[in-house]
Image (cartoon, rainbow, N blue to C red; front, side, top):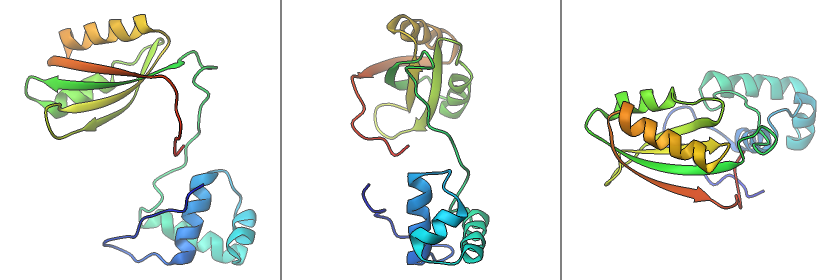
Length: 158
């Protein structure tokens, strides 16, 4: 896994040990404090204290699971660019609520340029995506969409 290539620009300072802890937790969110202490050559109590600090300052926002989307019945990954008729934030909130058993709106990003929003969608089938696109054009103030299906994922941070 590539090393983290970030450096904090403002706020609390992070040292090399903090960044090493973040790399390890990013790689495996279930890693124990005991294992972290071995990996970064720090005592377990010091790791516990640093991890708490990283959460308190907002460097770690939470822990999540990574899913096997094929096994869950949502094997299709699509990215949907959306142009709204005006109220981008309200449309985004409405779009995020449009998931159902055959389609999950996993992420929604506000973007610059010609398109207002970019959605990351997991779907059971191309028909589920088609039905979703029809629904959002009717219900969410969407005036145009452009959809791209991913054929495979080469790299994912999660």
